[in-house]
Image 1 (tube, rainbow, N blue to C red):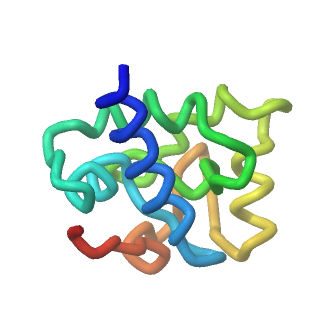
Image 2 (cartoon, rainbow, N blue to C red; image 1 turned 30 degrees about the vertical axis):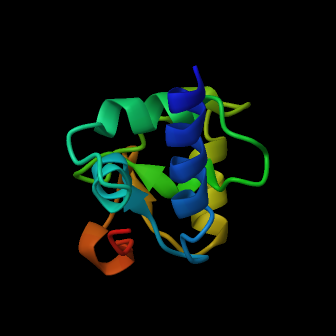
Length: 106
């Protein structure tokens, strides 16, 4: 279990760096921590993240709000993103590249 905890800790460390008003993808986080093929595991980590991790800023590779069902309220993820100036329409980031933040590979 320690290996999973370490993986999750690395995921959370990267997610905490996502700037206000920006988003990143599960795959970008996986790549940043040296586990490029572990996007789904990053998603699993985000499902159970601590409150200080901005999970609303992590979306899938095309900007879909795939984690939205893990937020209280039907549109909370979208509301949090929009409050930061991120444009969302039909559960997807509008002009995804404009808001995309790519973490540095560690």
